[in-house]
Amino acid sequence: MGRLSVVALVLVVFARVGIAADARSYMETQLVLARETQVAFNADPDRGARFFRTAQGEDWSCSSCHTEDPREAGEHITTGKAIDALSPLSTPSRFTDTTKTDKWFRRNCGDVVGRECTAAEKADVIAFLLQPTR
Ligand code: HEC
Image: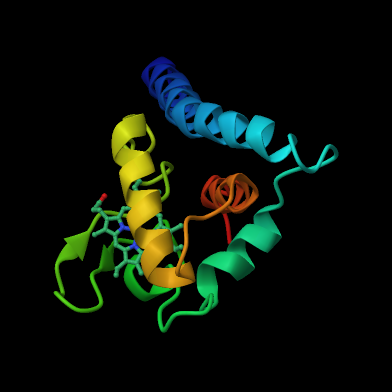
């Protein structure tokens, strides 16, 4: 591998760590909240995947708009409007603006679950979004 490729690779790796840092810090906040009621709680990407892909009481699931693979771009199920991929591995701006993240969690969980998502559910979903392969 040439010197430039090594530099490029290192930059890419650092950029990825930086991207994941925002989502991880949001997830850490949810973990602290979840442990107030479930002391031994830990985020589980598989549970997050099931939650994400399955209808939760209302007609839609998260994947109705964000697709089964959150690394892919989605589409709003009623308006058809394009939605950038939800995974921060694909869309670096994800989870960098807490106000925006909170707002959309509240709104989308209302549509899908009929209530706000719990801290535990949010932590699971983010653990799922951070998985590079799925
Ligand atoms: C009816 C369509 C729809 C459904 C269903 C839906 N979302 Fe979304 N979601 C959106 C739109 C639209 C946005 C805002 C546009 C954007 O950020 O690209 C968004 C944004 C978000 C964001 C903001 C991320 C950030 O920080 O940029 C999160 C988190 C999110 N959705 C999670 C979920 C979860 C979890 C579910 C399932 C409980 C879900 N969404 C279901 C349409 C949907």
